[in-house]
Length: 364
Image (cartoon, rainbow, N blue to C red; front, side, top):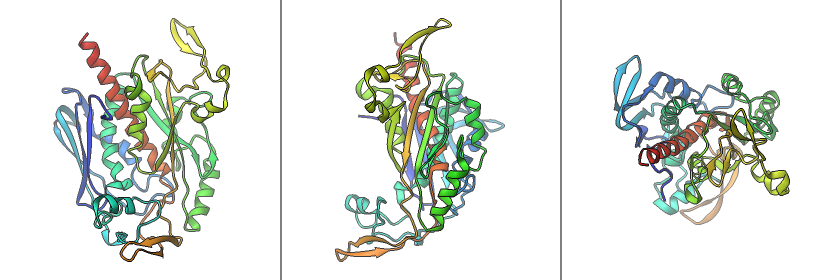
């Protein structure tokens, strides 16, 4: 079972390899994208944009292949698109956890699957660093969706246990969301309290997690399908590609389990000649197919497992218990920088579903 039906996204490289990148096949030939706008979007993921990001600094200059440069940073798609990003600020010596795996990292699982050299590069292919090429190609997808009247925007809904503004009961205005991206924390409200809690945890050598909410505006009805082809299935699979994501829910999500049917159902109505729902606890999707309301979902991010406090682990060489203190450069929380990654993953999933619908319409 493929994640996508039209697109194929391959991300390559490792956290501390010479370069990382991504190749996307299936993008519509002849359409254009603005590399400057992609760079602006990708800057939201870079360290230094928001509070609590890692000291690691990377230029993240994107080199595009498979598209024709038209001037002024505009490229025309003419086949598989590849983006390459140089890893310039690497310190693989900081990450020698092959024998003593870091708790809740992929070190041990990679050791079991791929052998003792699997954890040699700061998390390797499991690192959050791999979201840099994801955001780059997701930025292209966002532009192609915008031409179709579909806008993807995300923000922090919760950080360090502090809840901020939410899409429930009413999604925020698109411009309100984009405005928060310029704040020290991309959060609609309660940012000061959340920052104080995250700062206190960082001072202890600890980390915090949070929730990113995403709203997809302008989604037409009829996109998606049943079972594995459902819009929820596609979005969730894409978002789970982001390291540290441990939960995804749509609309009211798990809250629906605590409601009665009469409370949970979204009544239909006609407004200005269009079918709408009077509330949106289903998150704009019924039966795996979009119903024309904004698609809304949340992604839960675990606290960064790299913390400077002593932690129990094992010595795989001697099969004994031991203790480690993780060194290196780490985020006190990944949540602020993950907002752009959620938008990117969602944009790729939605673009794939939209292109699939366009293909089916052409074949009718």
